[in-house]
Structure formats: C-alpha cells, structure tokens
Amino acid sequence: MKNDKMKNQYRVNEQIRVREVRIVGDEGSTVVPTRQALDMAHDQGVDLVEISPNANPPVCRLIDYSKFLYQQKKRQKEMKAKQVKVEVKEIRFGPQTDEHDYQFKLKHAKEFLEEGNKVRAYVFFRGRSILFKEQGEVLLLRFANDLEECGKVEGMPSLEGKKMFLYLAPKKAGVAKKSQQARDREASELEAKEAAKQAKQEAEAEKSSNGGLFANAKISADALKKLTETDE
Image 1: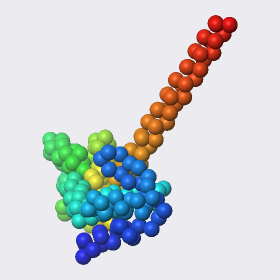
Image 2: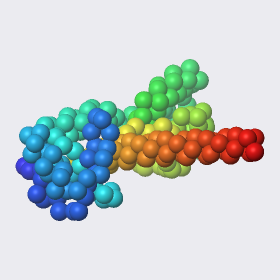
Image 3: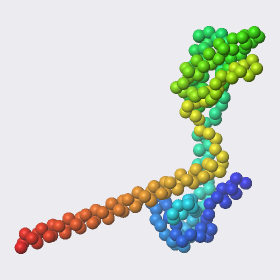
Image 4: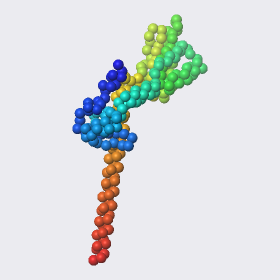
C-alpha cells in the first residue's frame, strides 16, 4: 500500500506532458524538449522520472523507476533514524527538600533537557504538608530559574490535588516526528533544490565565460585602435 502511494507521487515517461524538461544528473543539467528526453531514456534503457513538477521547467532524472523508488525509501529510512523521540521525564520534590537532594535532581533535569526531553517537576504534599504549598511554589520557581539556560517554562506552577506541577521544555527541542507524506515531500524538495542550485551554478559559469570573451574582445579592439593611431 505504501509503495503504491509512492508510485503515484511521481509522473513517469508518457505521464509527463509538458513542452520541455530539465534533465539533471552527475554531469550537470540541461533543458531539452520532453520528446527528446523520452528518447534519451529509451536509448539508455531507463525511465524519465519527474522529481520536481513545480520547477520551471519541471526537473526530471533519467533513472530506472524501481531504483529511484528504492533510493527514496532508503532516504526516508535514514531520515527516520535521525529523528529524536521526545519523552517526558519526572522530577519529584518534597516541600522541604534539602539542598543536596535539590542539586542532585537539578543536575538530572538539566541532562534530560539537553537530550531534548521535557521535564515535569512536581512537589508532593503528604498529609498536613499541604500547608506549605507556598514553599513548594517557591522551590519550583527556583528550579525553573536555575534551568533557564536549557529549558523554558510552559506554565506557572499549578496545584492538582496533592501535587504542584511545573512543566519545562528544552530550548533546543528534538526533531518532531513527521508524517510519511511530509518526509516524501521533503525528500523531493531537497532533490529539486540541489538540481536548481546546480543549474544556477552552470548558468553563472556560462555568463562568466561569455563576459570574459567579451572583455578580451574589447581589449583587443582597444589595442588595435592604439596601434593604428601610432602608425598614423
């Protein structure tokens, strides 16, 4: 089912019905009529695959379509492997937590945030210790202040039953999980950007080359004019 969705995402061969396309490959890129591109694909025994339909002209590759789909699937797996799973780590305090215990838990919370995880810190009030809820709030606010460099507060301390919670999110958040469609689109856009960048570089190189020729021609003309004036 997933392969069918991926196959329907790209236009191939006769499905490409524009006047001309840009062919990209290891040796650069070139704009040719679509009919010529189809002939090139046929001669090489491969397919004409449209990888960026919104470019002008659309960007295509000459490649075996099955191999192309395999490469896309492999790239998606690599991207998925790099994704960071964000977890919520809990840090528990008592309303009268001593300094040593506080510093120990502060260290762990900092490690959790630097790893890209969220932190849910809370003060648990047992029995009549609920009378010290203001003290618990002060402790949580201090905790948030001490973690200011690596965490951001998602809400002020709030009392829920016998627990007062404070939520912290990492300032350098992990990579959010993306949908399959988003990963497919990102892979296609990346390939299209690389093709466009390559085409731009070639155009600039060609422009620079023409500019050099014109400059040399002008220098030669000026030199010839001076030589003529000297002879006179």
